[in-house]
Length: 155
Image 1 (tube, rainbow, N blue to C red):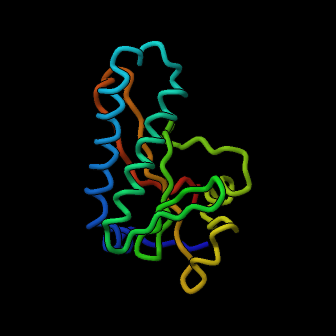
Image 2 (cartoon, rainbow, N blue to C red):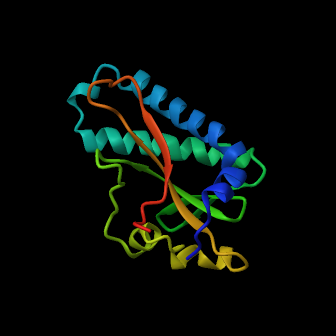
């Protein structure tokens, strides 16, 4: 488990932040355009899954063209590695500003800021800090998307 200070986060992630949120914005715009006629009939969890999947696809493409970023897939786990110090997952955030964590060992480990066993061998020299690219769509502003980089651990 690795903890990094806010200063380290700002230094390491500053040049990644805007492109990352631009990809999330583009995924949300694609979702709105492609589901315009049926979105109101989709369950909120279905909407969230579509937005997440579009974002993950865009993040994979972004990693392919970005130095210092790598898309890592092991089984069903898909994460973004940034500067060999950060591991990022895309998740919808609830109104309590926390992400929902599935009950898999990898998800629970990630939520405790522990790199999941399936990819830990990629970060042996310097343990990575686990963060989420978290988002939510406000109820009173459904055309906007709130975006955050967060560590869900209580510490």
